Image 1 (cartoon, rainbow, N blue to C red):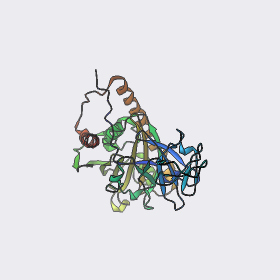
Image 2: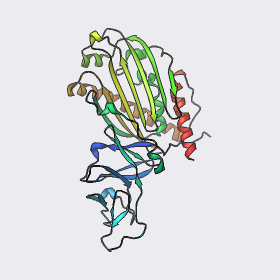
Image 3: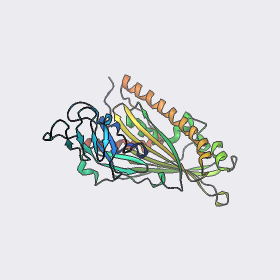
Image 4: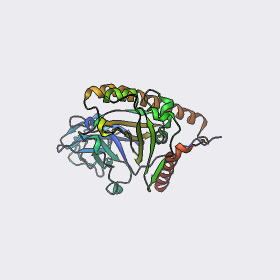
Length: 341
């Protein structure tokens, strides 16, 4: 019988809980991460608060209540909770019950996303979220989307660590350079990160990229791939097409993937595609459906993998040279999970 146990995920890490634009002062936002209910809202000074999404009085979501100044009020009991999770007001009596509170989680905003720390709170300040300045830098045009994938987060990590599958999954989006044998992957490791790169031989850029950028679709250019597993909840990759300065200089795509385990079988995937060329909404309107179609294909494939695992367990996968980065990411995640054990 195959082992059916999931590899788990670290809790002591920052995970994306929502887009900053989705969290307002008018109404609370309920979500779920690491199999934990969380409610988000903004206080009067604009800061985001993350609390456990369950009224201390009865099992009713606080996200179904309302925001009152710097507090959130249960839509069932009327209990009001401040940013620390402490109950500060009960409508039926003057005295607040001793110990009435809900969990409070550290939160930070970075790159247009709200990041939450659902692990040991005292560790959060020692490991700030990874900076992603390109997501808000006006020098980069960015678009993206978000959805849940019915698969364990480890399957998403494996996928992001190896782009050689792109040519098989979606030949339309795939750079022609990926059609050949992949050059050796150069990998750099730290205790908690994996970064890698490789230089591909000169090849044309995809027709859709040439169309929006005005570059030649028949000329061959050197191309460079860089990838980085920066945290259990964050990937940041890039693809450079090395046009000479006379043709406008290098064209770069930056791909940002924030992955948050909802539970052992579901992962929230927030993806962003940034570029340093072809500014304007018109180019984004052309590019968005191309990338969205590809990421939806990936989602379908990973959900199929999860179905196979649920039915038959984890197997003994055959790995190739292109899996070098993925195997290192697996080692880091296993160690982080074991250290919390």
